[in-house]
Length: 206
Image 1 (tube, rainbow, N blue to C red):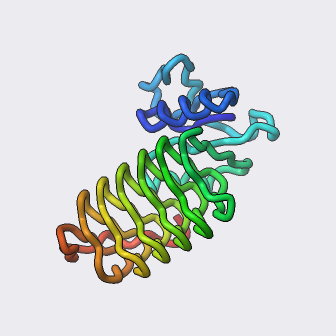
Image 2: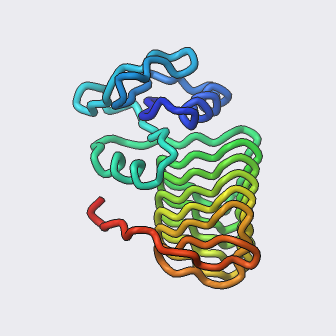
Image 3: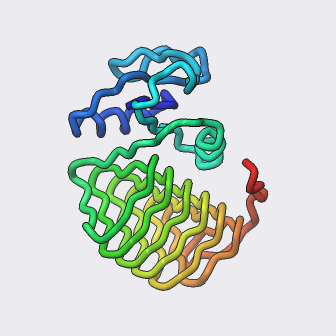
């Protein structure tokens, strides 16, 4: 497995892979100041043409927009990293490139898109559908039948009640309680959650 991104997020993913007995064949980062990730040297920018096609890649970058941009640039296959303590229903699906941290619960018939981050101890209940490049932060909770659009960030400790539709590239602040549908690009905070502004739209070609 190759990792692209040598930040703190990459450290967590590296340890998940180690816990699963996977071999980390290389760590890459475009920033020349990053020289080391845990016990692994950083080998500079990743060039898919120079590395074996039989090795999978995880983009270990927390920023949803950058992760999407990198995924579009790479002509390679993507792996997943799932912590051994995660509790995932056999009837749920996890897309390629996604990372599931320690203590995560994913209940029956949920669908997790590509290149998602489900962070420590978050909870995804039954029949949820998460688009690609979503990040659900630590201790956040989605009740059943919630739909989350591409690129959305669910803040630490946030709660979303059942049956809601959360749009694309939404930001839900830490501790927010979401009780109504949320439109694309909205930034929502508070209890109950209220829209305070809108994020800049992300082009589909990103």
